[in-house]
Length: 243
Image (tube, rainbow, N blue to C red; front, side, top):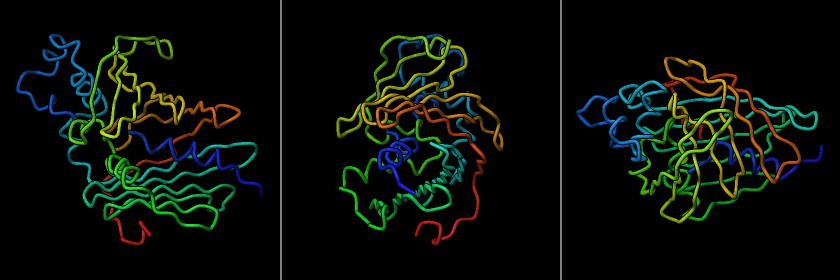
């Protein structure tokens, strides 16, 4: 079977993407939103409220997510484990039952295994993976040193959406779109990953999460749809999960 490096890179970018102090304010959430429509931190706060609330996201120590897709007749399975309690994550992609790539972040280092070879990531790339140790990293953008800017609104998937520019300390920029009506994230866009759209939000153990994620990338000849098979929180993890 011929493996496509572009495909595996695109799938890696699906999970590896670039919570906010605003959610801790004493005023009611609804009041804060009404009086701070131009505050990007409040857009993030509304998103956190929409997916389940800060009190719930703060209690999530780890998450295990399994997604499935099909590409050129091949079955693709992506498993991602985020463990914020121990600052580690792993993403494993298999194609037709064979391991295609694996990304690991632990002990402050990032490692990629692909094509039978192992490579340690540069420190700045490894640092970017730290955000992915959280099931909902959005509420910690400020903590990661990201700069947030609100750039008006656009229509995304038929909905009016706040356009938020997220700039990392390394200068990488990702644009995120949040529904004005619901607060849910509709899309992210960057030069590296292209467009990633989130839809069909469903309840998973009391949290809302998109069950359908669609990638439109210059690295792929067609759009790739990934379906969320399972999502669990606060499970018992072992060191073997991150080897």
